[in-house]
Length: 143
Image (cartoon, rainbow, N blue to C red; front, side, top):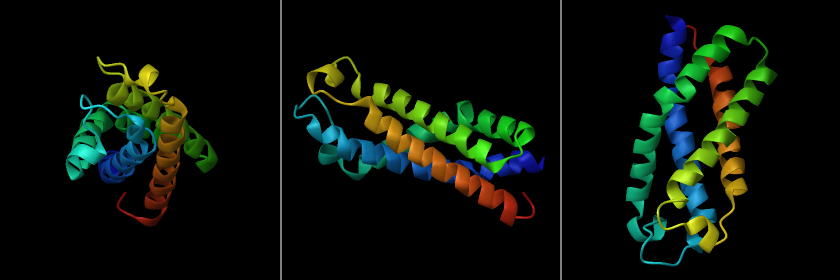
């Protein structure tokens, strides 16, 4: 039961970190898109952050929640946990990049958007998530 509560607590840092990684991705790659067909951070402002937050509220239970369960049950070394969460953060970044920019308009090819910026930003978010997860596991006793 402690593992379940810990995973629910980790939902909050996941949403915050990955939502801000999405905003960072929009700043880095989305500003290259200059068309009226795309609504980005310049057009809808704070609503973009709310949409990103909604995406990650839905994405956590199908991606990082099972991963957090498995990693906490099977892995004891912190460095391996950090590597796993960083890797999966990068994978989530590539997935989110495809969702945001490879819509029916094909912005990736047209504006030469780079998926590696998404992988790097989300891998950093995964790294910070792992560090937060490890520190919460060590410092909060009821978890």
